[in-house]
Length: 188
Image (cartoon, rainbow, N blue to C red; front, side, top):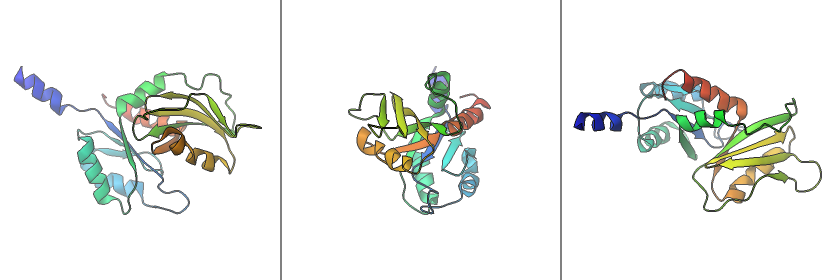
């Protein structure tokens, strides 16, 4: 019985790391592949250039934050969620009513923590005229939306922090799908 409890305590799920505001516009630049290599003892897998990683070996969130902060050449917000949360997102049908077109991008924003209060959804920006970004729904720390490919979209995405009252980082739905594929290659 004691052995079983110890085993359960040691068994941790895969973690997903999303760094905020890195490799964007020439600011806070680094090589994610190099960081993944430095974290190979944690079986880290790099997903793209935006600072997204899957950590497949057991580690606490606190230990992981220390590992990342020690290796990054700058300070940044570090969002960490469990792999099973991403897998659960994939089973939802959050974009069911949204058109699939080359000029429309599906995205998920990850909140650093659960907000004390949150605006009701759905909502669109700008509030009048042709929408550039639509917030469709929120599920716990995850906000689902779509945006049109337009230069002003980045400023609207930047307002989500104020709207939800916590730091947020955004990833394309394709990135979330890639994370789920990596997670699917192991037991979560």
